Image 1: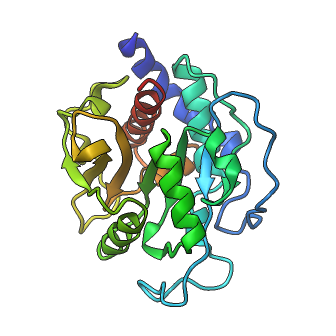
Image 2: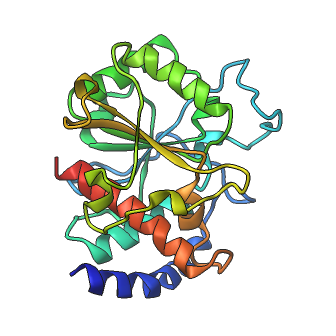
Length: 256
């Protein structure tokens, strides 16, 4: 099954081109929080939106309509969920996603959440409490699209939500990298030339044998590959690798 899926994946990266023409951060419409589709039981990509604190100025270039949490939206998730629906048995909503705050009770309907650019994330107390409750009750969150010193903000904010837990580095031997595709060297997919990507997870009771609660693609940006998979900006092999990682994350999270 995996061999056939891999052969199909190379083709499907080009089938996402019609979706890639819609919206996005580079000249497309700004995200519209609240305009979410009604929950219908299918896997739906849930993107976390957040307000930037006054001191959230890493890099000094975030201004105007460039909302860090919206990076690769909506092309990244639309392309990705199309691949998930085509290659797995997951019932996925392909043309719509949700944009949601951490303190929104609706978040509990979505078992997997995604956050871009956590270096700019400055949650208030209600959002911290919402995230803590979501993760403790079975939710799973993926952090992506960040590098360098942004890691320290992510660590600090997660300590507020889960003070007794910590990030633990994982490698290709962890089961998440064999949930659907076998990916023995996940670090081979790099987004930022000067940074070597690593993968960090939070587990119940700080025990890697127990449930994974959160996963951070440190110094990496797999959604960037999803967003532009229909444009030919990246080699097909790299785009395939980004899709394989994402598929593994979803299959792993939904099956445990």
